Structure formats: C-alpha cells, structure tokens
Length: 108
Image (cartoon, rainbow, N blue to C red; front, side, top):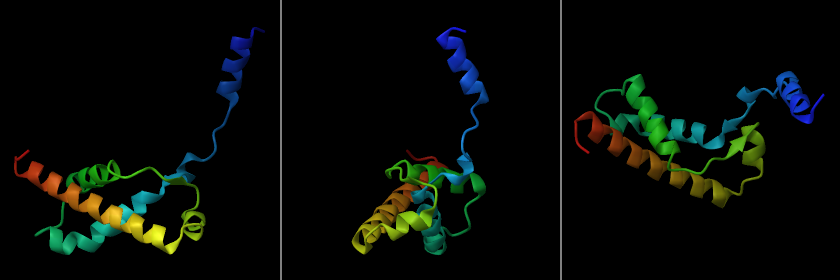
C-alpha cells in the first residue's frame, strides 16, 4: 500500500482525545468578570446573542491559554501573574461591553 494511502487510513482510524476536556483558561475568567459587572454595566440583562458577542469580543483581545485542567494551570501561576491576568480580563471585558452596546444602538 502506498504511503499516502497508509496515512489516510491511519487518520480515519485515529480517535482524538476528548476535545471537550480542552478549554481556554480565559473563558471562565471572562464569564466570571461579565457576571461580576453585569449589574453596573447593563440596565437590563443582556440577551444570549449580546452576551455571546461580548464573550467573543473579550476573548479575541486576550491570549489563548489552553488547558485540560484549570486547577493545574492555577497551581502553576504566581499570584502576581494571576492578578495581571484578571486585570487584562477586566479591561478586555470593559472594551467588549462598550463595543457591543455601541453596536446595539447602531453606532460604530
């Protein structure tokens, strides 16, 4: 069997690891920050679409930190690095909220 066909056959039989166990560490931080500020940032709770838009806008401003177990990442992150990450998240969420709410009212 030619090498190309062997590779195709191997790819078809390959079962990837559980991808649902891989997450971006920042997703939970952004979600936590959104809930933390929602009372002061919105006069009424955002609908699911606006919420998803804000999550995407915020996450696109942050570096990706993929982990399988967030506890492992937390254990190996210094307190100063953790504070810096939370500050970056707060800034990204504030910018995302401002951008998304401007778009909601038709501004650019």
